[in-house]
Every structure is written in structure tokens, then in C-alpha cells.
Image 1 (cartoon, rainbow, N blue to C red):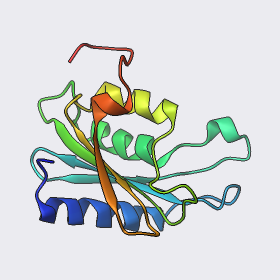
Image 2: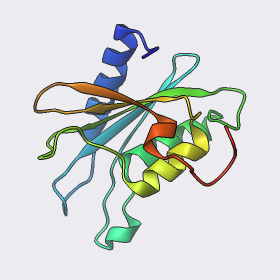
Image 3: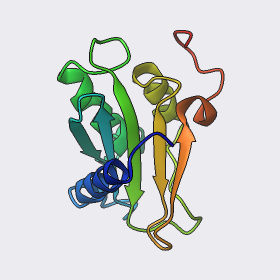
Image 4: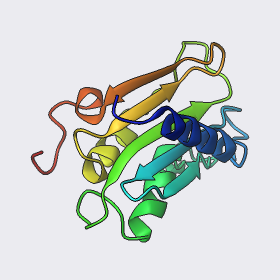
Length: 142
């Protein structure tokens, strides 16, 4: 992992805080995400559900949308280094992004970006490379 311990702590705390703003009345599964830019700026997002489940916006895509709107991302001059994903509860260990989020993440994060996956029960934080989360993603080559 190339992130410093302080960066990890800051990013996970931002994702956890973002989860407190989730709108999750259908799943009761609030999720937060935080994206770290090369310049240290952090963008956050939470899941925003809809009665028509396919219209739900996941936390990861919400955070990335904020970053892209501010001029950050893989295609911009201001790259994104890492993302943290946090959920208040998960019966299966660390929370992981869904397939749709992984594809959107691959569009805006470098294949070398570090993805922090948190387990709120144990407090453990795992780290995976973006390319490991979605090998052979659609889109641009590394």
C-alpha cells in the first residue's frame, strides 16, 4: 500500500461520515465512499436509494460524480489515487463495490488506484488495486 497511515485514517473516516448521510429506506444498508485525489482533496458520496431499485445511486458512483464535476479523474489533469468504501453493517466481512460501480470506478480511477474495503465489525481495512477489482474492464487501456 502506498497510502500513508494518516491518509488511510482520513479516507476511511470520510467514507464513514458519508454513510451517515445515506438514504437507504429499502435496504437499510447505508454505505459511504470517499475518493482521494493526488492533491489531497477528498470527495465523498453515499448511497441514495429509490423505490425503483435500478435507479438507486451507489455511494461509489456518487463520490466519483462529485470528483468528476470538480475536474478530477483519470481523464483529467488531476488524478484520483484511492477510494475507501464503508458500510455500517455487512454480514460477509468487508464491503465491496457492486459490478456497475466497479466499471464506473475503472473509467475514472487508474488501474493502480488503491481501493480500501472496510469491515465495520472487525475494524479491518483491506486494500485492493483497481485492476484487481475489475480485470479486463471496458474502456481505455492502462
